Image 1 (tube, rainbow, N blue to C red):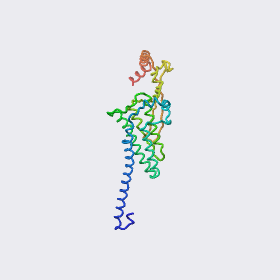
Image 2: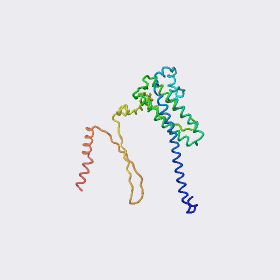
Image 3: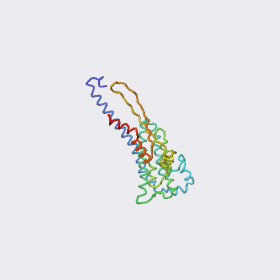
Image 4: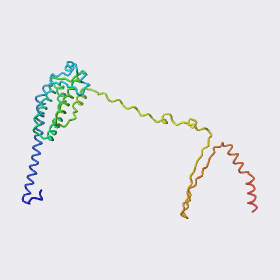
Length: 273
């Protein structure tokens, strides 16, 4: 664009870049303000409602608490605090759905979900250690499951709002660690069976079906190449059989070979010549 404009008008492009940066900064402030609105409602208006919340009593009063703990999609009646968190977030979503483009809507609610994911469990823990002791973490197993189920229901409801980017809520895991809830892990994989040779060890020759005293044969490949003539004569192979003979028999054969008449006749002929 600068190449198409005269030099005198290049300053207008710098002003255009400044306007673009100001617009981006202003849009960022608006999105942050929307998050802070939800934050102010949660921290100042809804946090006091955590007091006098007894999840153990809620689990005892709810006859379906046990069945709901095994149904991830079941509808759960949340406590006053969590129910109002969902209600106020849904109201803001209804307003912004018709005002913001889809990209900005996903952006702002991703920030809101990230804030709630961090703030809600921290408010529960802060209320549990407060000096007034108006709230305490559940002690019974049913009460712990009731609290976790209500948190899961809040996360599912918020992720189900139209046009939002689903958020991977970690608030449930944080509360599970706080309540010392241990999930049943998958059974460990079965050990791989070792090879048969490793289990039985090295078998002896008799166990492998090789009879004792069998002859072993060693084959030696010898290749002769004639480099002077430049012709390749091929490879010749010879097999040398080595018989395992007892030591005494070997000595007898050696003595017999040394005293043979053929050897004496050859020695006398060589001396006469």
